[in-house]
Length: 191
Image (cartoon, rainbow, N blue to C red; front, side, top):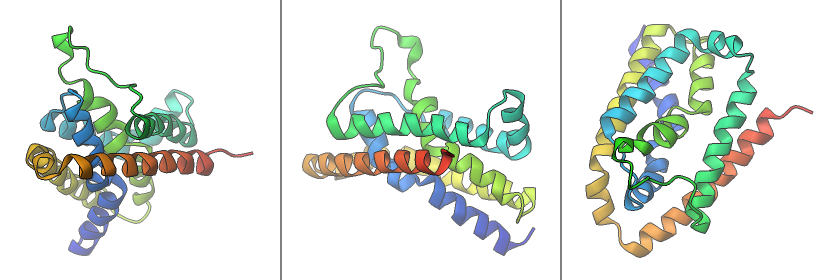
Protein backbone atom coordinates (compact mmCIF):
# COMPACT_ATOMS: atom_id res chain seq x y z
CA UNK A 1 0.00 0.00 0.00
CA UNK A 2 1.51 3.29 -1.15
CA UNK A 3 0.20 6.81 -1.50
CA UNK A 4 0.59 6.49 -5.28
CA UNK A 5 -1.55 3.33 -5.33
CA UNK A 6 -4.24 4.97 -3.19
CA UNK A 7 -4.29 8.06 -5.44
CA UNK A 8 -4.45 5.92 -8.58
CA UNK A 9 -7.35 3.83 -7.26
CA UNK A 10 -9.16 6.94 -6.02
CA UNK A 11 -8.86 8.73 -9.38
CA UNK A 12 -9.86 5.65 -11.38
CA UNK A 13 -12.95 5.08 -9.22
CA UNK A 14 -13.82 8.79 -9.22
CA UNK A 15 -13.86 8.88 -13.01
CA UNK A 16 -15.89 5.66 -13.29
CA UNK A 17 -18.41 6.59 -10.58
CA UNK A 18 -18.76 10.05 -12.15
CA UNK A 19 -20.65 11.78 -9.32
CA UNK A 20 -20.17 15.12 -11.08
CA UNK A 21 -21.77 13.78 -14.26
CA UNK A 22 -24.59 12.21 -12.23
CA UNK A 23 -25.37 15.49 -10.47
CA UNK A 24 -27.96 16.70 -13.04
CA UNK A 25 -29.68 13.30 -12.79
CA UNK A 26 -29.81 13.53 -8.99
CA UNK A 27 -31.01 17.15 -9.01
CA UNK A 28 -33.70 16.25 -11.55
CA UNK A 29 -34.88 13.32 -9.43
CA UNK A 30 -35.07 15.53 -6.34
CA UNK A 31 -37.08 18.14 -8.25
CA UNK A 32 -39.49 15.36 -9.25
CA UNK A 33 -40.11 14.61 -5.57
CA UNK A 34 -37.91 11.55 -5.25
CA UNK A 35 -36.20 11.64 -1.88
CA UNK A 36 -32.49 10.89 -1.95
CA UNK A 37 -30.83 10.46 1.43
CA UNK A 38 -27.04 11.03 1.23
CA UNK A 39 -26.23 8.65 4.10
CA UNK A 40 -28.34 5.82 2.61
CA UNK A 41 -26.77 6.30 -0.83
CA UNK A 42 -23.25 6.37 0.63
CA UNK A 43 -23.72 3.32 2.86
CA UNK A 44 -25.43 1.23 0.16
CA UNK A 45 -22.91 2.13 -2.53
CA UNK A 46 -20.07 1.44 -0.08
CA UNK A 47 -21.48 -1.95 0.93
CA UNK A 48 -21.93 -2.92 -2.71
CA UNK A 49 -18.38 -1.91 -3.63
CA UNK A 50 -16.69 -3.54 -0.63
CA UNK A 51 -18.78 -6.70 -1.07
CA UNK A 52 -17.87 -6.84 -4.72
CA UNK A 53 -14.19 -6.38 -3.90
CA UNK A 54 -14.16 -9.53 -1.83
CA UNK A 55 -17.04 -11.61 -3.20
CA UNK A 56 -17.89 -10.17 -6.63
CA UNK A 57 -17.14 -13.10 -8.88
CA UNK A 58 -18.37 -15.57 -6.26
CA UNK A 59 -21.72 -13.75 -5.89
CA UNK A 60 -22.24 -13.63 -9.64
CA UNK A 61 -21.16 -17.26 -10.06
CA UNK A 62 -23.54 -18.30 -7.27
CA UNK A 63 -26.47 -16.95 -9.29
CA UNK A 64 -25.02 -18.17 -12.57
CA UNK A 65 -24.64 -14.60 -13.81
CA UNK A 66 -21.79 -13.59 -16.06
CA UNK A 67 -20.22 -10.15 -15.48
CA UNK A 68 -21.41 -9.02 -18.91
CA UNK A 69 -25.04 -9.92 -18.05
CA UNK A 70 -24.70 -7.89 -14.87
CA UNK A 71 -23.41 -4.96 -16.91
CA UNK A 72 -26.32 -5.30 -19.36
CA UNK A 73 -28.88 -5.18 -16.53
CA UNK A 74 -27.27 -2.01 -15.19
CA UNK A 75 -27.27 -0.51 -18.67
CA UNK A 76 -31.05 -0.96 -18.91
CA UNK A 77 -31.62 1.08 -15.75
CA UNK A 78 -29.24 3.78 -17.00
CA UNK A 79 -31.05 3.76 -20.37
CA UNK A 80 -34.45 4.32 -18.73
CA UNK A 81 -33.07 7.15 -16.59
CA UNK A 82 -31.66 8.75 -19.76
CA UNK A 83 -35.03 8.44 -21.52
CA UNK A 84 -36.75 9.96 -18.53
CA UNK A 85 -34.39 12.94 -18.52
CA UNK A 86 -34.47 13.51 -22.27
CA UNK A 87 -38.11 12.87 -23.14
CA UNK A 88 -39.88 13.52 -19.85
CA UNK A 89 -41.21 9.94 -19.67
CA UNK A 90 -41.55 8.76 -16.05
CA UNK A 91 -40.23 5.35 -15.01
CA UNK A 92 -39.06 6.06 -11.45
CA UNK A 93 -41.84 7.66 -9.43
CA UNK A 94 -42.24 8.33 -5.76
CA UNK A 95 -45.49 6.85 -4.50
CA UNK A 96 -46.89 9.81 -2.60
CA UNK A 97 -49.38 7.65 -0.71
CA UNK A 98 -46.71 5.27 0.60
CA UNK A 99 -44.67 7.21 3.15
CA UNK A 100 -42.67 4.07 4.05
CA UNK A 101 -41.01 4.36 0.65
CA UNK A 102 -39.36 7.69 1.49
CA UNK A 103 -35.91 6.53 0.38
CA UNK A 104 -37.13 5.24 -2.98
CA UNK A 105 -34.42 6.95 -5.03
CA UNK A 106 -31.52 6.41 -2.65
CA UNK A 107 -30.81 2.76 -3.36
CA UNK A 108 -32.17 2.35 -6.91
CA UNK A 109 -31.21 4.13 -9.12
CA UNK A 110 -28.67 6.36 -7.28
CA UNK A 111 -26.56 3.94 -5.20
CA UNK A 112 -27.04 1.29 -7.87
CA UNK A 113 -26.50 1.60 -10.82
CA UNK A 114 -25.52 5.31 -11.05
CA UNK A 115 -22.68 5.20 -8.50
CA UNK A 116 -21.95 1.55 -7.73
CA UNK A 117 -23.08 0.26 -11.08
CA UNK A 118 -21.76 -2.43 -13.34
CA UNK A 119 -18.90 -0.21 -14.55
CA UNK A 120 -17.75 0.61 -11.03
CA UNK A 121 -18.10 -2.95 -9.79
CA UNK A 122 -16.27 -4.50 -12.74
CA UNK A 123 -13.57 -1.82 -12.37
CA UNK A 124 -13.14 -2.87 -8.74
CA UNK A 125 -12.67 -6.47 -9.88
CA UNK A 126 -10.05 -5.41 -12.42
CA UNK A 127 -8.23 -3.18 -9.88
CA UNK A 128 -7.55 -6.30 -7.80
CA UNK A 129 -5.00 -7.42 -10.37
CA UNK A 130 -2.87 -4.26 -9.96
CA UNK A 131 -3.50 -3.02 -6.41
CA UNK A 132 -3.76 -4.47 -2.91
CA UNK A 133 -7.14 -4.66 -1.16
CA UNK A 134 -6.28 -1.96 1.40
CA UNK A 135 -5.45 0.59 -1.31
CA UNK A 136 -8.74 -0.22 -3.05
CA UNK A 137 -10.70 0.08 0.22
CA UNK A 138 -9.13 3.46 1.00
CA UNK A 139 -9.87 4.64 -2.57
CA UNK A 140 -13.50 3.53 -2.16
CA UNK A 141 -13.82 5.34 1.19
CA UNK A 142 -12.35 8.58 -0.22
CA UNK A 143 -14.82 8.46 -3.12
CA UNK A 144 -17.71 7.77 -0.76
CA UNK A 145 -16.78 10.84 1.31
CA UNK A 146 -16.79 12.93 -1.88
CA UNK A 147 -20.17 11.47 -2.89
CA UNK A 148 -21.61 12.18 0.56
CA UNK A 149 -20.41 15.81 0.41
CA UNK A 150 -21.77 16.39 -3.08
CA UNK A 151 -25.14 14.82 -2.24
CA UNK A 152 -25.41 17.10 0.78
CA UNK A 153 -24.63 20.09 -1.44
CA UNK A 154 -27.29 19.30 -4.08
CA UNK A 155 -29.93 21.63 -2.59
CA UNK A 156 -27.45 24.52 -2.72
CA UNK A 157 -26.21 23.52 -6.19
CA UNK A 158 -29.74 23.23 -7.57
CA UNK A 159 -30.56 26.76 -6.32
CA UNK A 160 -27.54 28.12 -8.18
CA UNK A 161 -28.71 26.63 -11.47
CA UNK A 162 -31.24 28.56 -13.55
CA UNK A 163 -34.26 26.62 -14.87
CA UNK A 164 -32.95 26.93 -18.43
CA UNK A 165 -29.50 25.65 -17.49
CA UNK A 166 -31.03 22.85 -15.43
CA UNK A 167 -33.32 21.78 -18.29
CA UNK A 168 -30.49 21.91 -20.82
CA UNK A 169 -28.13 19.94 -18.60
CA UNK A 170 -30.85 17.39 -17.88
CA UNK A 171 -31.37 16.76 -21.60
CA UNK A 172 -27.64 16.69 -22.43
CA UNK A 173 -26.85 14.31 -19.58
CA UNK A 174 -29.90 12.23 -20.48
CA UNK A 175 -28.53 11.74 -23.98
CA UNK A 176 -25.11 10.93 -22.50
CA UNK A 177 -26.68 8.33 -20.20
CA UNK A 178 -28.45 6.74 -23.18
CA UNK A 179 -25.13 6.68 -25.06
CA UNK A 180 -23.39 5.13 -22.02
CA UNK A 181 -26.11 2.49 -21.83
CA UNK A 182 -25.67 1.64 -25.53
CA UNK A 183 -21.91 1.51 -25.08
CA UNK A 184 -22.31 -0.89 -22.15
CA UNK A 185 -24.59 -3.07 -24.27
CA UNK A 186 -22.19 -2.96 -27.23
CA UNK A 187 -19.16 -3.91 -25.13
CA UNK A 188 -20.95 -6.69 -23.24
CA UNK A 189 -22.77 -8.52 -26.02
CA UNK A 190 -20.75 -11.21 -27.72
CA UNK A 191 -21.90 -12.59 -31.04
